Image (cartoon, rainbow, N blue to C red; front, side, top):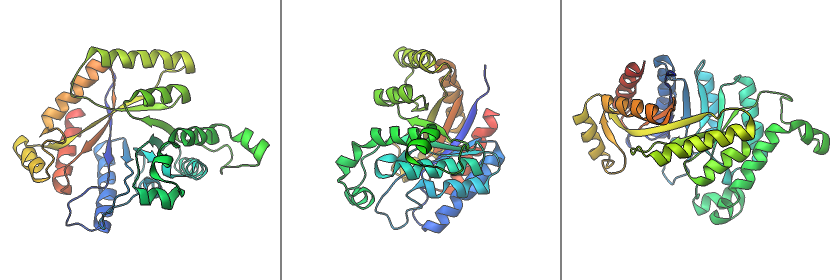
Length: 298
């Protein structure tokens, strides 16, 4: 059986008493420590929220920063809310980043309904109108990255460096639309894990693998996201979950329980590439959970 590969996912959420800059520094420390522990990638979510202590909103700003602080781990987005961004700018930025940090940058596409004010300021359109332009913008971004000779010849468009290295492209989501998008565009696929092990879910992935190979002549990369409140002590994980009002929102437990789940999931679905999001807000307890989990997985 293939060895498990696992990375860390972060949305910038930390204890509420920390200000934005302290949270940002902790994110950098978390990525650097994660690489030293053996995590091979670090993904950033995108969230635009009306909170004065928000760590960041656009992960594109942080991708080259984290790539500069780390040495080998991949840095990516989980994912870029392309409905409020310009495809030309996104394609240009991520191609440039991946050429400066060779084959370490990953661009994930995710859709979501932005706040009305955010949508108006970023696109000049109402959030519902922006939301429905997502597919069009994903297609344009992928096209700009993959067809640079055609764009240069026909429109004089160059995304420097010309003939540079393209970032890995990921479709995020477990919906039928996400599966269809990954098939049509030939992107990698990142899905959210379910605590249920159903044969129809496995069959769905098997069909996706087969159709992807038929369309693109290669096997797809599929990655799974595991989330939860993870601490070496089950009792402490429950205390933390309740204190954060997360005990009914996400799984919680000791490190061994998350290790067992990942191994079960790996065996049942034949998947070996994971992202882990530890929902603990206190940086100390969050680090304890991921460090122990990586030790078990190693």
